[in-house]
Image (cartoon, rainbow, N blue to C red):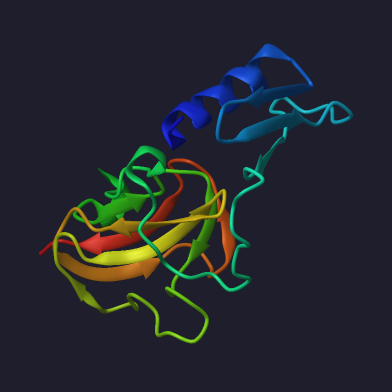
Amino acid sequence: MDVKEIQNLIKFVAKSGAHEVKLEMEDFKITIKTAADQIVPEQQTIVQHMPPMAAAPVAAAPVASTPPAEAAAPAAAAATETPKDEDHLITVKSPIIGTFYRKPSPDKPTFVEIGSTVNQGDVLCVIEAMKLFNEIESEFSGKIVKILVDDASPVEFDQPLFLIDPS
């Protein structure tokens, strides 16, 4: 099951009104719980990933790694135009739900800073989702104008992360 299928499952469970769904496959288990005690139009979704029993322990510090192809999210972020004075700027959005990190690990320098020049394919950040660190690459060449998310913050699917000036 890839990340896209998991995202679709989360959306389906949230819309269905179910309070808890458990899915058990050969190599992993997923439990999706929605908060039943909140009275809001959109329910909070909690995803827990339980690795198989034979899995190795996970390192405590976030370290960028290349996830397996079947579990990897698309490496390139979706980009759209922004309105107003920033019509020429490109918005890089999160392709997945997870935790945003500006560095590959705590002791390493950040991938990009405001004012950094990036080329197509350069890594902008990593997003950790279910113990997998997904590198988010730039689809465009340009200059980083704004970083819209704080380091180690949770991000949602399609949330704006960076503004890039392609000129």
